[in-house]
Length: 183
Image (cartoon, rainbow, N blue to C red; front, side, top):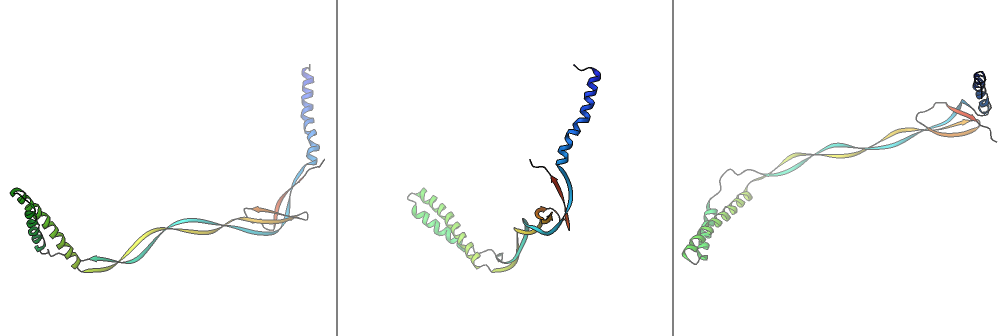
């Protein structure tokens, strides 16, 4: 067992001796920084694609009918009601069936006659064309070149090396030189 005085001596020796033990390792593995001559710098570009919304408009001919303000003839519905009533009356066998058939036939005939008259008026309505601007939003893909970095070649101690860097280093580049012993 060490007494207090001996313990302090061993502790102080350890503080002094430990760094001394590391000196040989540090002496054989030295790292320094130097400058190397740059022989070429080539920019690296990459193509970036992105979508952009773009409004596209065009002129288009559109057909439209002038509104018909005059009320058409009532001849079609009346004629349809008379023909429908006559057919409904002819189909019925008993007196009550003939009355119901006449009423139903007249209503259906009048409706059919009105439809025919409306179609005839629409077909005879004046048709015009007008130019309208029609627009829609489409997505276009746009590409652009962007600088991504530089391929740099440099010479150090007679040997040419290459690396990729974020910016142009200029005429020289800083290099780390590390020497380690080989057993």
